[in-house]
Length: 442
Picture 1 (cartoon, rainbow, N blue to C red):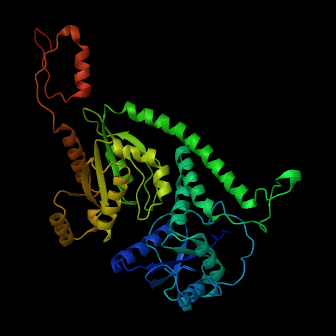
Picture 2: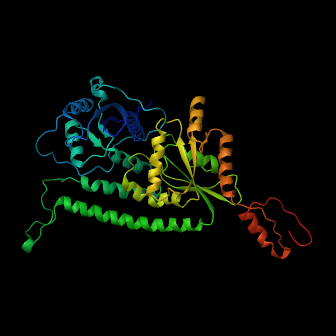
Picture 3: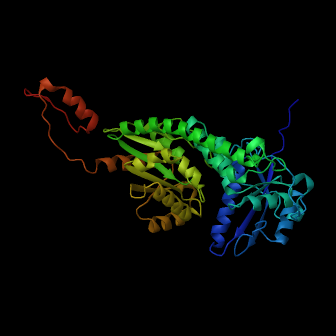
């Protein structure tokens, strides 16, 4: 007897198109939120969108759209008056969803709220914006569903995909900083500790104590992270004299696939957002002389939470300190020009914008011939490649090797037989074109 898999949690997407956002950018951003939902293990049942001059201060959207949103979740669509019911401060994991395999396209069960049956109702609302704690609470009360803004969604994915101790610490620090202003009273807001003479006085309230605990925990995590970062900094110092390349780009642009192709390493390759959070450093294969080290870095995304950039700064230092940045872009994604700009902004933030860069328009096998010609004309300095084509892998390897050989000069070196140690050094730091022996030495 085979057991049936439990149904996956369902989500509805909520987006507000502001005046400075084009139709293409807005649609692309919502599509990306759908992929984030899929990575989190959620099925999308539909979308609710509205054009507004700014987010509504009460519940992000207007009353009519709020009722449409509630049809997806089974809520009332009205923010009740009066104080909210007491609830827990914060869930450890916002969504109890099983891990997704990341394959296939994002599917939506229904396009219209009226088409949603009770069994298809969403239990989660994902907002394509960062919202205030009060806006999130109002939406929860009107929809009866859990509400996650864009930062919360990204943090949840990072928390799930973090593998190393360093990545887990970085994500936990960012998550606690996000939680701090969103803590709620668990009871009536009464004082938890007495104060003043004879035990009377205001004392420290429940929420103040919780916030102090969070601050103490963040300080403790930062101290532990600094210790790990010192070790990582020491390893980077040892690599200062070596040639280094960092693969950078938008999330799911194909960095890990190229890492595996160029180095032969068994890094995780999955068709999902933020599959890689840990930096991996491996030697270019077949090995070149001098040796070239390739590092895979965490992917970027629109509206990447600032706390995450700050927490992952030591990891992103691999990009800042690299001799060459291979900037990978998914050429099959219509929104790649804006993704290119997002990557530039993050590189600017980590002070890596002036590093030497090689732009690679990746996944070119998914693009038709006419589009290839247009891309080649529009981006003359870029190389159009597919990691699935061995000749393209060899081409990129040759471009990387050529970059480090551009300043090499050809010299004749005569080494006496008494100083054979120099021969070994020459083989490890130079490319030996020819080697001969005579009565004077090599």
